[in-house]
Amino acid sequence: MTRETDYALRILRAVSHGEQLTAGDICRRELLPQQFVYKILKKLERAGLVQITRGAGGGCRLAADLKKVSLYDLTEVMDAEKLISACMRPGFQCAWQQKCSTPCTVHRQLSRIQGVLDAELRAVSLHQMLFQAD
Image (cartoon, rainbow, N blue to C red):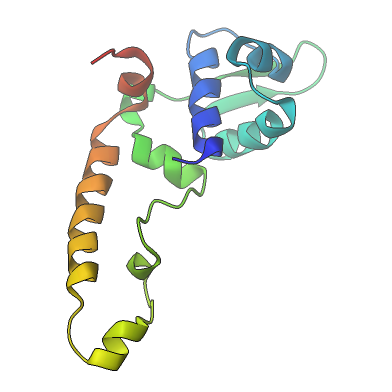
């Protein structure tokens, strides 16, 4: 998980109690650097996860049901790389496979593992991630 996705989780935790918070409030509560919080909040707003009110008395609040958003969804919002190897990218040209002209067992195993990882990320809601201890 990228640092940006980790920070996004913490931002969502801060606003998950229904109150409107400023970026500064979030930074203080979650011990986050302010220069990252603004950028991440914009991504979360574009995805409909938070609502931002600008101006005096502004701030942000949760706009989505965290029980309906998976950790996989959040990584998509944050443009995080979820692939465990570059060879998982569509259209990847494997030099080994081109040279040997045989299927790559490493790629096949990594593909299987990638499928398990993606399924796990989809199975965990942000609510579970933030509030369930087990």
